[in-house]
Image 1 (cartoon, rainbow, N blue to C red):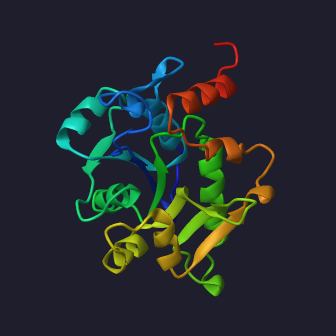
Image 2 (cartoon, rainbow, N blue to C red):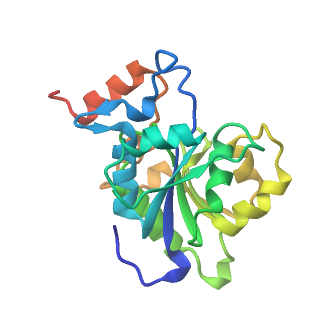
Length: 225
């Protein structure tokens, strides 16, 4: 975990793990506990988040039973869990369920299905946040990646916790995470092409939906396995 004395930019990692994995495999097979090398997918994501943020991470789950199952999938002893907000569907259920558990001003939100998540990529976002928070430019509500096709990445993103809390009342149950970004007043977007060479941003933002997706990602990460 990185050290920081800048309270205004302290960051908690929020990992969304409440999905039903309907495209991954059998009905009882959860992709969060699929293996990547010697780790579970969830454990790998939590490890990357922990290395780049300043507070113990939070994992958002759908139910108490899912929490109990996933607690065994992470090796970090200081991980806490939040339950999805039942007033929303999809990723926003986890995001809104987690903000009441997070006690830092900022959170880094990602999915549990990102096997190539990079702590260097998360740290780059945090560094950009610090560099773009001067009073003359206004206070950002989020810092997000902009892909070459113009779309903004909502689940590899820094969010100001208070801004997310205010947006909760403005969004319908079925809203997706991009609708949240569109609701926020000031979103700093960082084009992929501006990423430093040391930061594997395209890999870091890759998520997997099927077992084939995961196998392809593992081959990129562990080519000899």
